[in-house]
Length: 180
Image 1: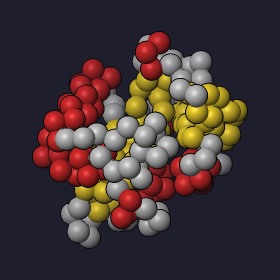
Image 2: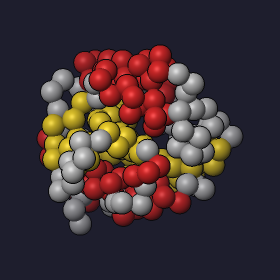
Image 3: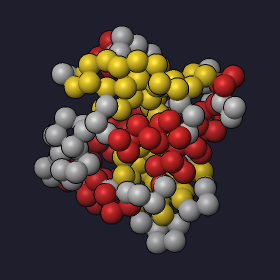
């Protein structure tokens, strides 16, 4: 899959095997995994497995999370993008076969607006290019940063639910409400 988007400060592109160092820095960080079950990866082999999994999503589902690259430095910041959650294995809040928006950034890039900036571009791509009728989002209720971003980009809070004994907020944005 060839994918490329630009924002004012960022490039969003497909995640590549050459991103292994950045993916390891991201997914081995305890702070990043504070609201993700507290299971950071331990080695670069696991980072590569994550990259290959995302690559399979591109091929099989036509969408996946994308590398976020800081234009000014060329640095791998993390990932942002859409994911098609398919089947019962990936059911969330009693939903399956849905598109969700997500983002995960290396902590030194937190607080710069990159999650919001990349997510705005991702929503535009999802609604205008992929023509999705609805995009969902979810975040641990205690993850103030992620909840704030989801609300800031226009997703509407729907309800709370439990995922692996963690209380989460569920959001949605319908195409007809996008940009209002």
